[in-house]
Image 1 (cartoon, rainbow, N blue to C red):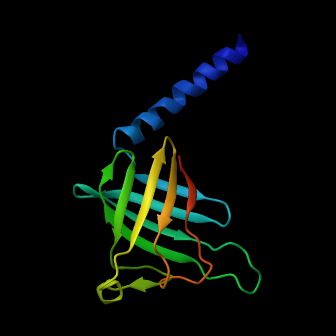
Image 2: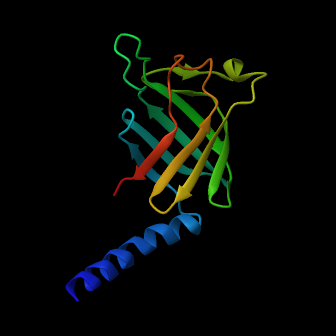
Length: 141
């Protein structure tokens, strides 16, 4: 009986997170721990969503690439954001409109409850050769 009550409580607490993502409330901070640490911040940008993401590269000794960052804006539709890269500057790097000219770079983020999965990101040419920002990021808080 105690186990059943515990399971019901867990489901009741998790339901608002899953329902929020399904209803379009995906804003927040998401963290990744493997294969290297990463942080993704998602916030409203008018009718769309802005994604600011920085992640480490898989450890490869001396060949490990530096951390990689991107910024992108796109709509939330059917539980995912397909966002086009936009210019940005942070402590690690900067990307200008000229850097993006003629390149159609995108990031795709799919949501499942409190997890945002970076399905793909066109970082080739912006980040180190073995950089990888894809994977599961868990919503903080």
